Length: 52
Image (cartoon, rainbow, N blue to C red; front, side, top):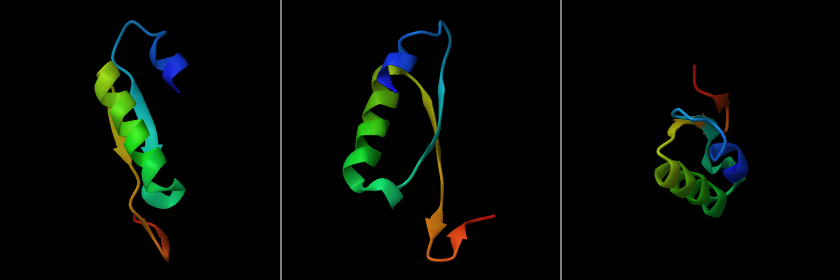
């Protein structure tokens, strides 16, 4: 993900992150977004699936 954030000249959008893959990965993605000025789409997922 970080390698891809280094390539474009404009602002990136990371789609998506959530707690489903664990808190450590979630905060790593947010840190990368902050570092590279990227936007983030965060999925709302619970026991019944993704919110609509």
